Image (cartoon, rainbow, N blue to C red; front, top):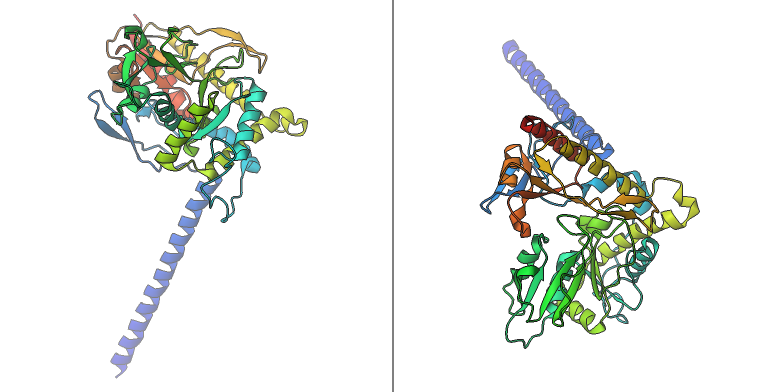
Length: 444
C-alpha cells in the first residue's frame, strides 16, 4: 500500500513537472515570436520573403537563385539582380515621410465601377486626375491643357490600349510597330503577346519600309541607354507614341513641356510606387482616348480606385512640399532627394568605369533644368554598360554573380547590358564593388 501511494505521488509529481515544462516552452515560443515581430515592425530585421529570385538565362529559360541575405546586410557571395527596374531605391525616402502619405479607405468606398461618368475615362478618380495635372504643372514636364487623361494598370496596359486605339480594324494587314534601337525590351514582347491581327512588331525603324503606315514608339529619355530622342522619320503614314516615363527631374533636366499627341507616364518611375500598378496617358484626340478607354473596359473593367486614391495622396504630398512654405522645410523634398541620389550613383559608377578599360558608358547630354534650376547631365534609371573585351557581356557578368539584361533584348549586340541603378542601396554598392574588382583584374 505504501509502495502504491509512493508511486502515485511520484507519477503526479512527474506529470506536474511535464506540465510546467510545457507551459515554459509555450511561453518561450510566444516571447521569441513577439520579439521577432517587434524587430520586423521596428525595421531592425529585414526578411527577403521572396527567397528565390527568378532570372532569365541566356537560353531564355527561367532560373532561380537563392537570396539568403545575412542579418548584417553582407551580400558579397550572392547574386545581385539588376535585370529588373524595381525602384526600391525610393523606399527609404517614403519611410522617412512617416504617416504623411497615409490614406484611410472606408469599407463603403470603391463599391461602384464608376468614378466620373461625365469624363471620357469614366473610371478615372477626380482626385487622381487633379493630382496628376497639378504635378505636371509644378514640374513643367508635360502639357496637360486640352488633353484627356486615361488611367491604366501601369503603362504596359496603356501601351496595349494605344495600339488597339490607333490600328484600323479593316486594314488588309497588321499595322507595323517600330522603334529606334536600342529600344525598350518589352515592346516586342507586349506587341506580339496576343498575336493580334491589328498590329505586329516590325523591329528597328531604320530597317523598316516607310511606304506603309506604321507606328513609331519614341522613348525619351530612352530605356535602356538614357538618350534624348525625337522621331526618326516624319512620313505621311507615321503615327507617333511618346513614352516619357523617365521625363522627370531626377533623371534628366526638364528643358520644356513635352507637347505630343499621345504621352505615356507611369507611377513606378516617377515616385517609385511600382506595386500600385498605375500609369496615365495624356491624349489630345478624344476619339483615340475613347478607344483606349474601351480597351481597358474590355480587358479589366477599369482601374483600381484604391490605387488611384493612394497615388493621388502621394502626388499631392510631393506638390505640397514645393508649394506650401509650412511643409517645404520639414524634410527633404522628393525630387531633391531623388536627383541627389541618382547623381551620387552615377558619379560613383562613372568613377569606377573610368578607372579601368573593361567597361564603357555612353556620354549623356547636360543642360539646365527649368524645375530645379541646376545644370546636370542626364542620369538614367539604367546603365547601358558595354564590355570592351568580352563578346557576351551578360554571361560574363553572370560569372561574377551580377544579373543584367543583355543587349540583344533591346535590338543591340551582346557586348551591351542594361543594369538597373534604382534598386536597394546595398545591391547598388555591391555592384560598384564588383565592377571595381573586375576592372582591377582586367588592368594590365
